[in-house]
Length: 287
Image 1: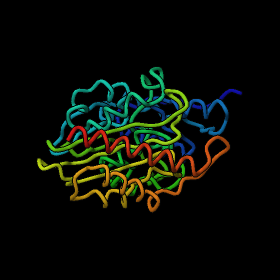
Image 2 (image 1 turned 30 degrees about the vertical axis):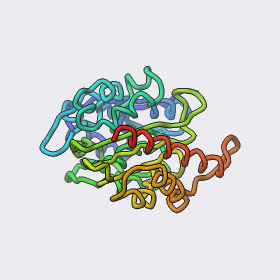
Image 3 (image 1 turned 45 degrees about the vertical axis):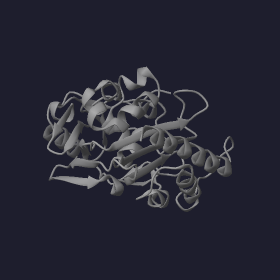
Image 4 (image 1 turned 60 degrees about the horizontal axis):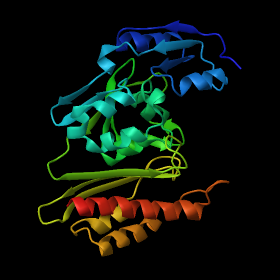
């Protein structure tokens, strides 16, 4: 199949893009990297009358430190996150996750904002944004607003974005000196969607005690999931074999993964525990 015929516009400002969408009376789609949208168009799962290409809007691109946050523009490509010194220094969890995102060809075109807007529950970056307590900056034709990442992912491929709204940037709190992070995923082949994936973002004091802990899983539910019960078991304690096992057991209260023809729910839960044990073990060694 081929995409249905559509009109195309390449605006040079956010306001121009928003007005173009509004003028199409919602019969429009924004496109930047197009790594998800183009296949969808080809299969006619989506058939907008207008494509609004936002890839050349300067305001939407780039990585910079702004106050206490690392600002990542919505059209910043995955490969730029992978190679950015600012990301490695101030949001190291994103740097650890970036090599696992699909394949180089996709990382060269796919965008950070596009990944969050699509909200694929098997994607790395939405879950890492959750682990990092990011803030999503959103623009509409009438106003701009910021949404905490915990309130952004609502359901399967469903976010807090209203029709016509556009992600401007993602604001990630700068990593503290005591920050320790770890990322890994289990997949059949490198670049495939993960069976289970996890990112851990923690702060560990000089005595080896956990001050802060954020654990986010993906490929276990219809949205990224915080393992809040497991986090609570670790707070104020050193990372030891006993505390790690306690956190693994606590996952039963945090995760209720579904199964499919390849991976039963029980297996996915087991793999989540294994993965969490590995990541916490890495943090313990580093501490």
